Length: 556
Ligand SMILES: [Zn+2]
Image (tube, rainbow, N blue to C red):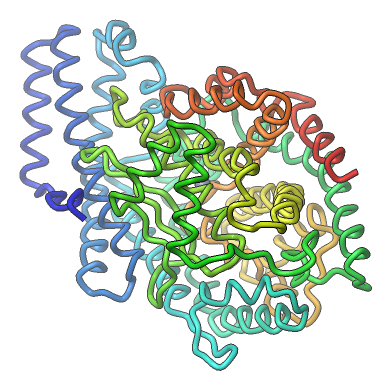
């Protein structure tokens, strides 16, 4: 991995010196040209830090059991508040500079909007709480990454259970879910304690910073620009009104077609597909098909995927000790993204790959942006790039699944309709949690059950004790480690489905709009980016109803 050879941690002393030099430059030349030169120096320092911090996080998630990776991650967590302190002071200086109008001409106004949010989220007084928050997140990650269960004759990681959860045999799916949730039951005290500590820590940080509760701080940390909690609440209501009845109907219809008396939780992953659908080859085969698929979609995507595959910029094997899930990261000083995933031999591998490559394509397309703040957008925009590629790659699915491609596409769309209610449930739940920070574990589980009644009324856990008592949310990593990062997926899905609809009538224009959106990176807010791509803002009345009626027609 040549590209990561000389990514290393700048020392505290070197960082302090760099920032002192930038500040001295600003004192000496307080005009637009001086500010512009200092901005570039500051941006360079931030790019180096980001490359090192992202590489440290990647290595740790690749093997949470390795002492050297874990101690590097601990060092990063310990040092991050110091770096944030330096950056916050610099952002304050830029925000209040007399040269700001000239700088906005050169850098764009969005960076200033982001910094306006950022500077409210940090004070040296919360430094120790930030370190504590990272420790707790690490504990959660390790608890699940190292959990194993005996299943099908082997001791397996939770990630390794994945393919059994989608098995064509209902009994196997049930047994796999039972094994999975017994691992959560056995760790429930720890899971409750970690979360309780996280909520208390976040609530304390919010109050120290002068916010009423963590909800306000959470929105600022997510750098939400142009909308707030009231807009999000209306959107959730719209999902409950427009999507939930349709999703419920889809569950009933597909359950009846499969011959189930009632649809249980372990059936939901298999609705709409007759049996298991899997790529018809191993990992290298799947990656080779991906090389062909992206080239067939568009030459720009083809060129990009070659860089990823030839450059060793993916780690997709599931291994013991590897963190669960999938994500895309990037190394700004190397101008390359990296995809992390856990393949398990199911159709999900292809979907995850398209999703993460969508993120990576955006990161690659906007690698030369003027400010590190613009390399990736805020998450509700970022998830448009990833989710849209899942849909724009639909015509390529025969390469992976042969005759099963139609079933893959049907299940994917059905999953989208079930996901919207689940996604807003996760969001609504977090609002309840942080509005009531002193709730007990039992009260938190009851809050989740209230969300399930509202948004997932078809849910039936049968004899799965842990989810039946309201514990399903504990598998959702975002709830622990990235609070309020979830509504983003539902907003982005509403946009991705609009691309899906448009591509059916005008594929080439839609692809051009998608590629243009990716190349804008994070240079503008969600509302601006969405409008520039010719999409309707999900907060706009009727936007959600529009995509749901297209899905309804597809299932008619
Ligand atoms: Zn994503």
